[in-house]
Length: 205
Image (cartoon, rainbow, N blue to C red; front, side, top):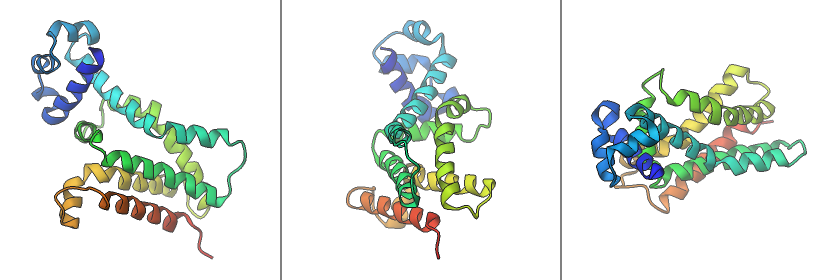
């Protein structure tokens, strides 16, 4: 029941915002009573916080194995391997963002992005920032000509391109003149993302 309430809450909060969504409607869609929200989360604020944490944890899990495998390699990767690591992480994120599962998450996160004091900040700092730092480490080795701020900006824009496959889906459909992003276009977009990674990170002679 706890997971069902969180799933419904993510969708309703994403569509209506915190103020627009009601615990009564969330409980009704989850086919339970409002007392279950109080029992599991203490109230609306607690449910919202749990929904935000669940989204961040799911995002973090998408690439968890990739980062774990890299850490377990035990040897210093060469430039080709570093590019492969960055490209694989971004392609995996992009593929997830193209999936239907990501749709309610993206709506929720889009609202939170406008709030510097978002409850998600704590969870991003804990779960996502270490992974960002690992990507920055790869970029530092590949592009020693960039200072720390430029490295961070590069990783941010690469991640933004992967995330925009969902967050800018309408614009993408308009540009590509399609009703939705389906195969083979989805794979083509991921291939283009991989090409951009290599263009940015391969040091030219």
